[in-house]
Amino acid sequence: MVEKFEKEIRGFLKKNADEKIVEKYARYFNEGYDAYGIDKDKFSQKREEWFKFCQKNLTEDELLALCENLIKTGKYEEASVALDFFIRLKKNYNKRLFGVIGKWFQKYIVNWAHSDWACGDILYFFIKEKIVSLKELMEWTESSSKWKRRAVPVTLVKLVSKDDYINESLAVARKLILDPERVVHQGVGWLLRETWKKSPAEVEDFLYKWKDKAPRLVIQYATEKISKEKRKKFRRSS
Image (tube, rainbow, N blue to C red):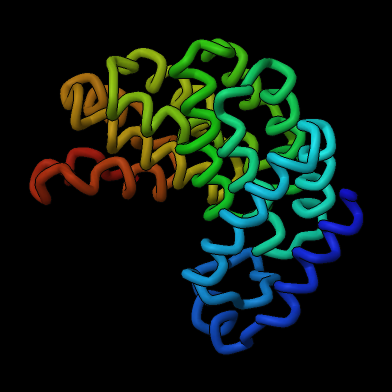
């Protein structure tokens, strides 16, 4: 059943592929964009239909196997189906499924769109509902995958916007601020910018202490909402 349905999904994607759509969105993906190019509305409707079929005909383990088969191909829309289905499993989230999404981040999630989607709609829910602790998520900062490391600050972006996670946000920023990867710099800067809205003084103090060591991109992102005049104090000394 899984193999047959997987072929059906892939068959639809191949049949409805549009190179013009691929060209339209490829410029947003510096790491590459391996996509079919599917009309957004048509794709959304089919995902709804496919998940309803899965609910009726597949066990959770079969559904997860299907999702992994799709996400590991590297095709953009196949990964989108996998993440969409995983999001719809919210009522079943547990530590086992946290391990599954952790594996996907480690091995298969390779672009900012899928990473940030999963952070906001999957990882946020795991922390918000206390299915896993923030400490468990912060262990991802040691991952060899830049996307898994980026997932920590990006998930905190939503958490700090909804609740008081000031200290936790600064701890994550401190942990990753010297990370070698640009996508992590962007995530850390984004987190600091969001945290600044809640606690300007603390974030500005943090940025001032790191201004001569932190990657310029972190400072750029973090200070976007600060006045132009005040931003001058966060320039490097040399």
